[in-house]
Image 1 (cartoon, rainbow, N blue to C red):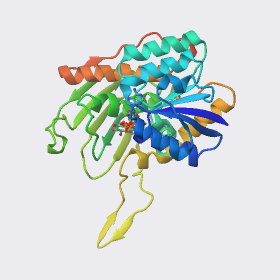
Image 2 (tube, rainbow, N blue to C red; image 1 turned 90 degrees about the horizontal axis):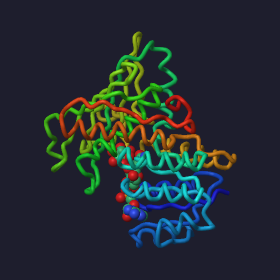
Image 3 (cartoon, helix red, strand yellow; image 1 turned 180 degrees about the vertical axis):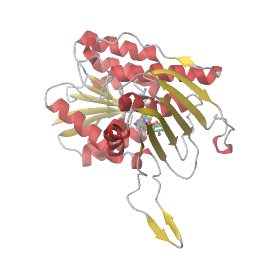
Length: 336
Ligand code: NAD
Ligand code: ISE
């Protein structure tokens, strides 16, 4: 039984705690903490976990074998570094950290520890539709382009302008690295007419990424689309196209209309992907090895592209991406 401590008991923290306590096997949540002490106390009482006053107290608890970090992005670096220092595996929600420099500090600490301890929560790699899309690429000839849409019904009040890149588009940044097993070479961010639903946010955005091998990827980022949570992706190959399905389990025909229900948010759309992601993480640790999913290097590479995206948004220009030298710990290619 893997004993897990959770830092951050907000939306995704509670969702991951629910899956670890009621869905998955081989895991027990023994400790929780949150700067919102009331929410941590209520979650801890509900699942019978010890409530700690700080993240470092959870990390250093003798009753914790591995960490799950679900607090806000700017706090990730401190907790991931502390887990590495304690020699404990750490699953960190995306983004690994909010700048590439912070991610490189994590990479350096992990390399110095001599083994992989960090996994980053890029769950699309575990999604059945994305896995089927990747498997279908061989059938459509050399990929040339990809069209994506990342639509949120709404975002929380703390969501700031640049989070459209650092918190939202970062999923597509990781996904295309994994899908095409290639790096992003440059990024542009175009700014369309502004939606009236987004307040001060520049919403939507149109992101264009150039892969090193020449594939061009466009991503519509809409974070106040109201009608639901809609994730789309279509690859155009030399001899055909392959697209994600519509994520709906049922089509309803009623009153002269055929309708596919749209998920409300990421919890519903990626429910099974998060389950698979966590079960594979738990199993990899139980097998005695380190984590095998998205690594600190993947977290760094996504952050390098996302930093370039933020610069592209500010300047309106095309920004090239240059990665640091990849340490041997992470192999030689983009992880498949
Ligand atoms: P949230 O605001 O609902 O929850 C975050 C929690 O962290 C809050 O309860 C907050 O009080 C707590 N917190 C903040 N600073 C802290 C600190 N220093 N120590 C301990 N607790 C602290 O936010 P959320 O939507 O759950 O997002 C949390 C993280 O998960 C973010 O990094 C976000 O990008 C990521 N996320 C990932 C996905 C995904 O699809 N993989 C979906 C949603 C959120
Ligand atoms: C959120 O943090 C997530 O990671 C969701 O998957 C994404 O769709 C949303 O835009 C982010 O804010």
